[in-house]
Length: 200
Image (cartoon, rainbow, N blue to C red; front, side, top):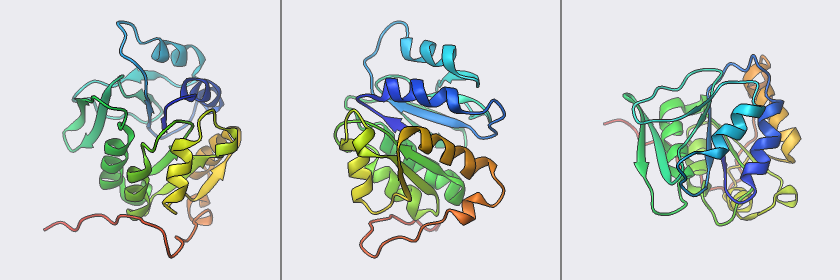
């Protein structure tokens, strides 16, 4: 999941709605400044029914854990674990989503929440191109509509939902037998999905 402006409040409302038996790994991107203590992670730990872990270089993703990308960094999933790289701008969701698409293909699920600018728009094209699913927060319910609008404009978003409904859709897609196939949405002809690169 990716968010920027308004994302702290969105995650604060979203994370408590996850069931404590949620079986998949969750990775959160939140654009935020660097501080000695990461109050964002501490706030999530207080409200989350799942363990919350601040990612470090070399970590592996664990099922049923909320993993948080450190402030001012990007994260990419590799065969050797998560790789963390310092970032000077706020385009931190795209590298994560691209690596998730390459690693998990049709099992990938991405959600773009409130935020300014267009981070995650490139990443959702890779998620959708690999056969994964993409959700976006309804821009009318977002504090900042830039990120969800940019994702929607790619044509690669399956569902546009207000935040509480989006959480339930994530849970259904992951936990309800057959839901992932039942909730498949065809790409419009103008969509700009990026299929995975064939191995040479």
